[in-house]
Image (cartoon, rainbow, N blue to C red; front, top):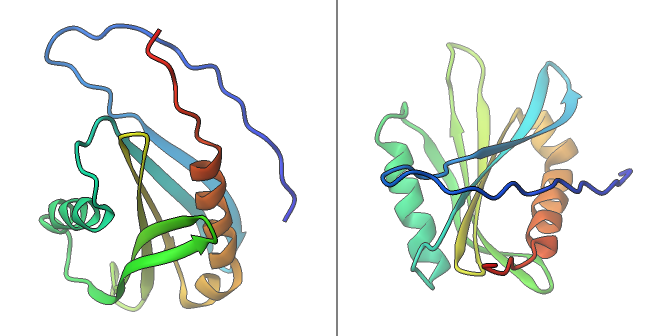
Length: 150
C-alpha cells in the first residue's frame, strides 16, 4: 500500500452556546469490484468514559435504533497492532433485495475522546481490502496528537 501523510490545519473558533461540533471525516478508498469504499470517522470530544467496551456498546445501541435488522457476526475487543486495542463489530445486512453487505465498525478511546470508524464491504472486498482499512484506522489513532488547550 502506498502511503502519504495528510496534514490539515486545524481551525479554532468558538461556537455559540448550545452548538456542538459534530464533524464527520470521510476517507475515500479504492473501488473494488462494483463498490466504492469509504471509511467514516466521527470523534466525540470528552466522552467521560474510560472503558472501550462501554463506549462501543453505547454507540452501537444508538446507531441500531433506526437501522434495518443486521446480523452481528462478531463483536468485542481486538488487538489491531501490538500497542492498539479497538472494539470491533462486524455485521452483515441486506440494504437491497439481493446485495449482502458487511459493516465493520471500530471504536477506540484516546486522550479523552471517542473515535468511531465504519466501512461497508462486499464479501470479496472484506477479504481484499479489509486489512487496508485496519491499517488506516491504526494510522489515524496512532498518529493522533493530544492538542493543548491554548
